[in-house]
Image 1: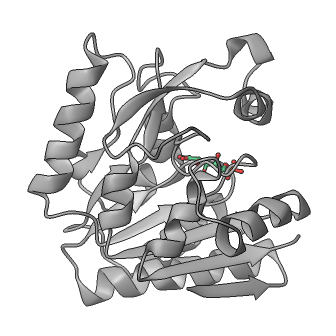
Image 2: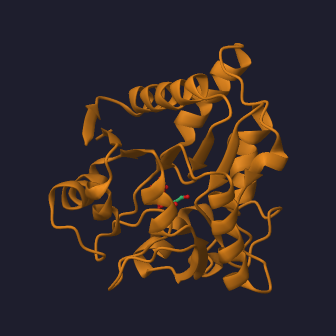
Length: 236
Ligand code: F6R
């Protein structure tokens, strides 16, 4: 594992964007696994800059996102589809038809999960998976549990996740209680994993995840078994 500590969020964002840009340059038709949340926003801004400067071409890139809230459709301003459109896809030359976010409004979420996994498998898996980490150690929305779940599945969000994400909603009661998330199978099958985290409040969970025991109670700890993980952390 490559654990890089940097001095600022800006430095984190530039480094993470450089890694993603290298992936796209080395394999223009790559499959990117993408994340939402605060942590990758700066990374996406840097990627947009590179694309606008003519240094990066997304036209042959395919993407698959980690997760979506159950009950929110893609037009809802707190849905993860909306987040991806506004924070990245609308500003780069990616073909939106080649961007996938699980549907949180499907009538049959189990079938949606199975179809999502099939889509990822049909693409040949993920070349580079970008991740953030929750305060409880979740990656995607794989919350602490008794087992690691392999497939894309529906989860009950933990109280700490609902509290952490309430900042994006008018009130905590508006935060969806369930999400659909990629499972550990697709994440662990990704050829490369890049996890970005910032803030002093993430320090303890990063120590547990990357230097503690491997346990589904700290979901990100499974990444210790992945052969190619880069973590970029900024305390600020
Ligand atoms: C987002 C996701 C989550 C976030 C995590 C950290 O798609 O899957 O695992 O990465 O909750 O969120 P932030 O970056 O907002 O602290």
